[in-house]
Length: 336
Length: 252
Image 1 (spheres, each protein chain N blue to C red):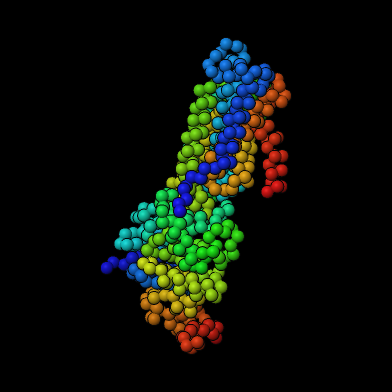
Image 2: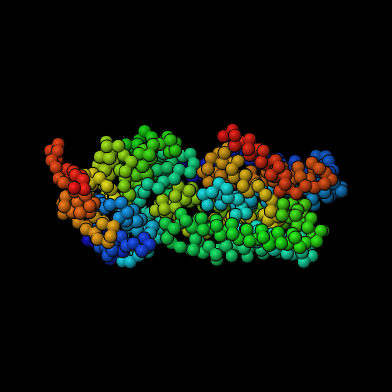
């Protein structure tokens, strides 16, 4: 009898099917109703009608971006909840998004456009990540496995402090901003996909999502053992420090990329891992990919709602994820 | 023949307190060591250091002739297993799957794993628990599963921190007897029950917690006068059931 490491999982396949369905549905729904024939014609490569242009240039990149953003945030959240052994962890506890936001808003205040702002955001995320590793280096670079138990706390506290500092700077920026800048800044801080209409960037984000899920899933067995205790995992052959370093890096890059694309979309990175955990348990081999797909699905649905519910007014997607997600989460919490 | 495990001038500190000072002793293959000492004497810390989890504050620890800190983490996992009472069960998992975590280093390509895991469970009287959710076990049962996990790791050296602390009288004797019967294993176990130690161990290490120590064959170390001094309480030898037993007579 042999137990294979990768269990084919029916819930995961169902989630993937639902996500594909949600992305396709997002192509049909919007201020213009798109007949099925036109959507498929557009996907087949025709830009004959204005509608095809709407589908190809706006809805498809936006739906793919939404999926990637949700997936990246949920993956980061799932990793950090396991790594820090803290169910309250979310992608923003490392402070990476705070650093990205500071840089993005600084670019905005200097009058930059969307592309420059995204570049600034990515740079801010990477700089904050470097800062995190420098400040919490004792937690990341030591072979003293026993210290592992406390070093997770060290990473957490350092990240929370960076986030708090970034939040203070953001408050200052909001206070000093002009009225026109203020609206853009607030949308960005709440999470907004209205600017995510570049198909190449959307595809790049989906590829990054696939890569980060693959890197994280490869370490899922090690993470499972680390959840049972760092000392035990170490004696069983897990390189605890290296695994922790790799996973923090993956979580930070995923968060930085998501924030760069859509601002700080709230809630999904916290709740998607919990929803999947309630459904299939805490085995990281299933949870990490499952949370990523569920997070993607959640944001695709939320963003489709965000741009249609009050059309032509577009709501920030981060507001919708929380408005819909909180009641659903509380309902599930009572059932389990 | 060189020793399986050797400490030379080992010193362990916690804060300003030096509880193990200049400890030197060698463990040869096949020996069974009991580590005894009062609460806070540093038994757990010593086991963590021997396992390569905690660094020595001075001196060396050599496993198979090589400093324990120089081993690769996966190579170390082939040579020593550690049982502590700090287990966490973060999600629903069968007892069998829990024991199979010991086979991590085989990366799923482990044809013997399930057989070894079942044998290890049987050795500690847990065969019938194999399919149970590990979170439904009692503390004593969970401790035996932790011991089975270390056995399934199939290492020459097994370090056990108070392996019978949560066992009922029958299982205290059973667990130690089964451990002693394991072929090709060298065992180092901390424990508080002097009689259990005497029944189990070929050698003993006495730690005072103030730096002093004594290591050697059981008949030289597990003696009433030494144990009385070690635990600062009067321990006498009495005869019962045809055996010599240690009797804790109390402070005076």
